[in-house]
Length: 281
Image (cartoon, rainbow, N blue to C red; front, side):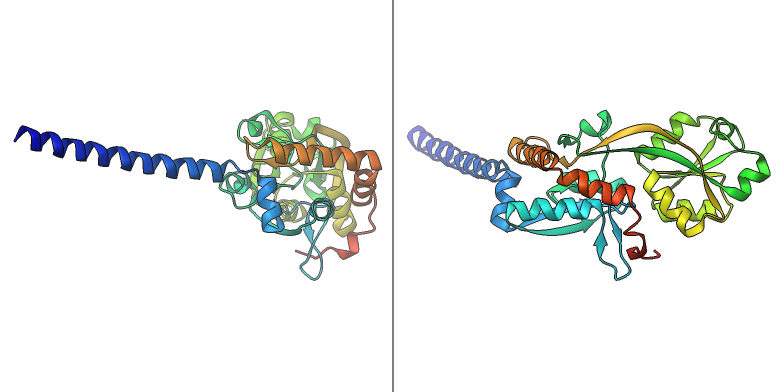
């Protein structure tokens, strides 16, 4: 009886060890697969997947619905230099980092500014662009209320539209703490509210402001060209992957040294040659 019990116990113990061994093997395999660099995944897949949101002139739709803009040029060139295709994954801005972490795409190339808070969740490449925010005013509302300077907008009773979860929103919070901020998920709605006279001001980048003034300079104007909260933009990638970070960093250095990044940046940020291409949406 005791011998039988010992035998059964040995079999159970052996089965448990085998099962645990199988679990360990499966876990090791999963860890091995998950630890593969995104760079290797892209090469095997033959396609670079980019997460982006639309911001003028970073990424926008032309009159045919196709994506154009500085970031589109950048991502296409990165993919070409990798020898792979490119797939753009338009994503709501306030969900773009969670989507990256969930593996919906390989990197964010969407005018994302480097911030300490974001850096707790994602890794940033070296910066490849610089921008900042200015304030535009609803001409009718500003005239009615006597709002002329930036200081005039920092008071109770003033409303400023801005895009949710952006460094533009942070800039407005920091510079106009007494004003009421109204948040939108899309820039189009922010500018439309200001143009319609429903808010006093709207946060903007200089290129977007120039674009809006060309379309409706009779109802919108720039309060001051002074940049508030200058920013540095970079690619964002998931943490724990030095290979893809190294590739992107060296790509940025190479394109900066050749002048390619400056040429593309100047085209989209200092000229209006592209303005007629942009759709009305």
